[in-house]
Length: 277
Image (cartoon, rainbow, N blue to C red):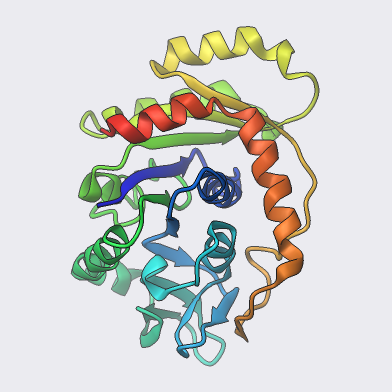
């Protein structure tokens, strides 16, 4: 059975997708069979696999970074805005199931848990490590009932969590502490470390900040990741094209992985993997 590690964020666009991709590449470089997993993704940027099934481009790229063929089990639930009618296409295991709205989804999402569990267990039987990406924030309190993408998944598969925040937006202490503080009591033990992403300047100037973050959140800071420029397809760009491996991206995957490896305490990351929740 695979060992899981989950990337959650204090908000959208804090770097969860890229950090997941980088860890997939790092674990691959270290000799492990690794795969990405995102139980639910909402995006119009999709790819059509060789099997004819549809999944999010972000999980396709993460799979390529991991050195494995994209498989629909890596993204069992895809929510895609419908161009033909008002609503959202619910794509389940790569195939269109129905067009829904937000209210419908709240009613049916718990019925999708067996599909998520089956997809995860399939991956777990094939790989050593599964790097799981959450969505948005785990403390959107009006949306969290019966969650199937953040803490609901962490609990379902007993996955330790790295909580990521974007310091470039400001408010790093409020975003990390506030997220931890708003978690339910049962959820907090899943957070094993935090990551400060997109730091501009000399990271040594943030030593006091690290100490403060560790004191107020009660967990270690696993790394300060400096801002880096890279060239990958936009996560929310236009999609629907047939998937084909793009060898020109290999250099970008290695660039990002090398940057993240230097920025994170990988000994701590491996310890979190080993000890779990």
